[in-house]
Length: 467
Image (tube, rainbow, N blue to C red; front, side):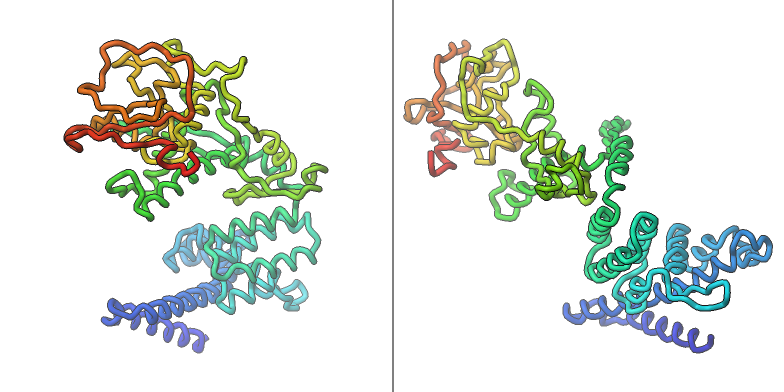
């Protein structure tokens, strides 16, 4: 025991020396990284050393011991409380220590013989310092959950593979791999779990006194897939434009959380003008599964961006949801022009505007990140919801045009329109008989920005080389 205590004291002295060293603040990057790695190894080693101690404390504090329980003798209600108080961790972390300690410590049989640990690969990795307690607990927890439905050989092989894959992964990345390992070990358990997750889905909306609206949601993988694909796709585009300097905002300092909030708002705003829900094809959601499994209805698959594996029935249901929209506009069964009878542009109208504008006519963003807006405002100018009075704009450009006083002109003949003294017409122009996808969109700057108010070309004619 004295040897162990001396070793712990030496490690503690070394850690204290590092934390109090005055040169640590200005340490060169290479040395700083090396020191962080060394301290990480030391921390994992200390955690590994604590695990069998926690397991033994729990063993000597078993409920059946009553007053003879070690924890009760020390004035604690349970072993978890005793360990958390002694180590300065939470009760949950203490319980995790006990669980991993019991799973990785040598087992003493009833006859007094010592058997190998229940999870030898995890125990070996802990002792080597290649994984920590969190990773070990995640691996052990999954293996114990499926052990009654999987043969021992497969369990041992999967434990070895997970221990080999764990070093260098974040705990979230490891949880994704573990979820897929569970699906491989127990494919029949995926569909019942999906039903539980789907029953637990929900979205709560609460308006706070400050005026903020709080949304809190929990979604099963199938419900979450299109939400993540749409929101994260928009955010990725925002980040790319920020990095390459093409952002339409002069200074985009939004956090990721703010970008996600803006992306969700844009998506919901776009649905207001759609005739039904769902409003678009779900082909941007990528589902992966072998052809044989898809045809037979057995096995499991995955969804890009979702860590939780899904059953064959879910994959087949999602695959059937994909839609293809042909570029056929103005047919006998398609109404492209609603005039003043409908404020929001229809989906067919938006497709037609996409052919002309190619996306945001002002900055060139793709159509999926734009909305159709009235050139002559619906309320102020009594502008009709017609194609020749529509233009595709992203949210940022829409605000910029309105706030700064830009004008928009659509020219079907190819000539550059002249700026007018006022952007507000005295009468509503009559509806045109046709719509040309070759028409050009011109933006006329306000006088304070350009005294000559020289029109600037936008739309597909500017951003698409094939136009």
